[in-house]
Image 1: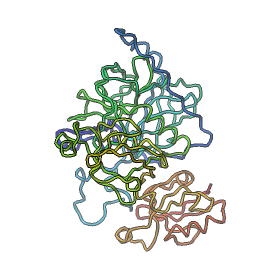
Image 2: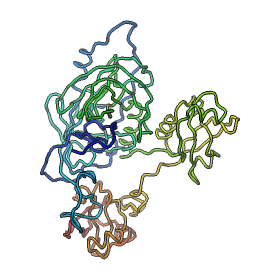
Image 3: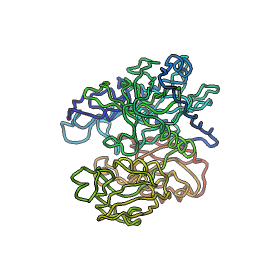
Image 4: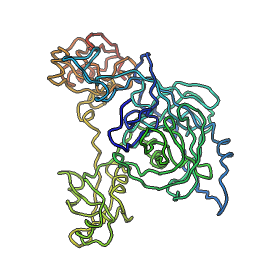
Amino acid sequence: MRKIAHPLAWALLGGGLAAVGTAGAIDLPWLGKGQPVTQPAAQGAASLPAAAPATPLPPGAAPNYRAIVQRYGPSVVGVLVEGRRTADGDEEAVALPGLPRGWRPGMPQGAQPFRGQGSGFIVAADGLILTNAHVVKDATQVTVLLADRREFTAQVLGSDAATDIAVLRIPVQGLQPVRLGDAAQLQVGDPVLAIGAPYGLAQTATAGIVSATGRSLPGDGAVPFIQTDAAVNPGNSGGPLFDAAGNVVGINAQIYSRTGGFQGVSFAIPVDVAMRVSQQIVANGRAQHARLGVTVQDLTQPLADSFGLQRPDGALVSQVAPGSPAASAGLQPGDVIQKIDGQPTVQAGALSARVAQAVPGERIALGVWRQGKALELTATLGKADDGAATKQAAAGSDEATGGAKLGLALRPLQPAERAQARLEHGMLVQDARGAAARAGVAPGDVVLAINGQPVDSVDVLRKVLAASPKRVALLVWRAGEQLFVPIAPV
């Protein structure tokens, strides 16, 4: 177990490690094998439910937790995962020069098999389930355990690391979904109830109050968290947070801990954020986030004084990315964003959360304080950078393959990778979905050839797939060995 480098750590629930924030479930030894199960969402998927009207308790009335558990306990599920996970660099070091046994390009050193457990809840009668993205991260097999002890292999329709939301589907009808509430109506002091499987103890209920709303955590600017003092622990990840009327208002996701266990502070993702993301995943297999292109920080009173402001409210712009939507809108370093779409901005996290929950192309109005004057600017948001994997050619896209689809995201091998693996050419698999995943291709494999033609660029795959073949043969390098993998493009 890795030791905490800092006395306080932001702990992902279900991490099972004291230095949590990297793993998504309670880690246990496991010697099985499997292939990634993440797949695009099926066409015609059922729509997700809308939020229920807010039903606050009468003044002085106590919440009936017993009734909430009896009615919605069957809607809470356990999520069992198996896969391979990479140990942190300071946990395992390579003592000798050269490559560790079993190394392959793109595969982090020290990947170890694991088992884990989290929680989730049913949102549609036809088997749609919400949980945390970190619960199913790196999983090659996901099993959902219902309250009546039935077990089903789950399909991961998609996950979104930015908001820590994942959507699962199990092949069963007639399930009892939860009732969704309105997280915006929560106020500090409101009672809440959490149900989940802490440390694998299924159907555990804990109660508390809302301690704060709109919390922005380090590294999690996309989510305005609900802070509570309801006891949640590793294994509670992905479980529901209910309000006093039995409506789900959040998804338990993180704790603030020095030990990895509950210490009185926990955080839940507001259900409205979760539903916006999950609706995109159900429809498209992924979520898109917008980008403004600024770096912001909170104001302090000394900073507010220097800018001629009476109160330290607003998001101080410290950097504007060249060519970004922010630059096009006229934002400058030193601007203080005081309003977003007419709503006062108290902390910088409010801007990050608003932008992350928007869609590319959406326009937002910004009230800005600049050199003693108030300005009104309008920005048209761009698309958030999805990282190197999407910047590289994606052989799984219709555009890249002329209509045929393998489900692969590839990039060229770096010179050091070619030298280490002793390969003259090839494309590294960064992501495998759909047809490729079903055929057994996995991230870290290297595609050497398609139908006998050496692959050194995506153009080679385009040309072969442009003829819409019923089946292609990929020559794949994996951990020092070569094998052919037949794939039927879709």
